[in-house]
Image 1: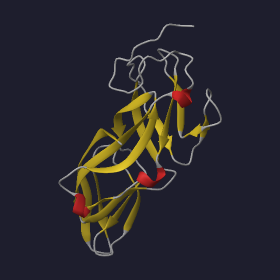
Image 2 (image 1 turned 90 degrees about the horizontal axis):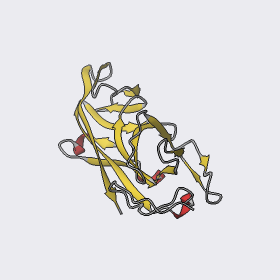
Image 3 (image 1 turned 90 degrees about the vertical axis):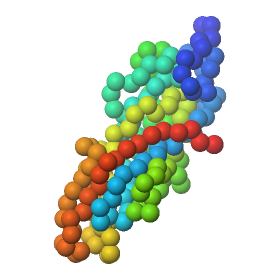
Image 4 (image 1 turned 180 degrees about the vertical axis):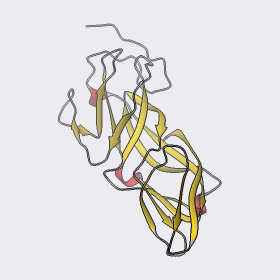
Length: 188
């Protein structure tokens, strides 16, 4: 059996072996917080369970950062390879240390960002992370934006560039989302 390897990241997973049962890894809950400026938009939210959260991760065992974007979706369940009969929304092996890691979206944590939230960061989703932590987020597409005053609901809004603009025929005004920013924070 291999000697314990000490983690070099801020994750709670320390002194783990390569063959560690993934269900025994310490759970770290990490919230994704966003802020943006809404122009004639009253609500911004992910499209639903099929929404693809586009993330990069850092392995808590070896500190390796993923080079590729990974998609985590509430409507996708993957069985854990090691350690029992559990399922997760995303399971992968670290390319460097070969440790199996998992991420599960906490369903009731998904929230909308509203016009009242402007000017501050708001948590819109929490991830239950085992063996990894999110390192970066790309907003991508699949958002829903609802215009003010009973205006149109825009589906499949693309925030890949950090902003989005359109025109609402119902309120006869331009609408937009600007200055999209994010951060991650551990939560209890």
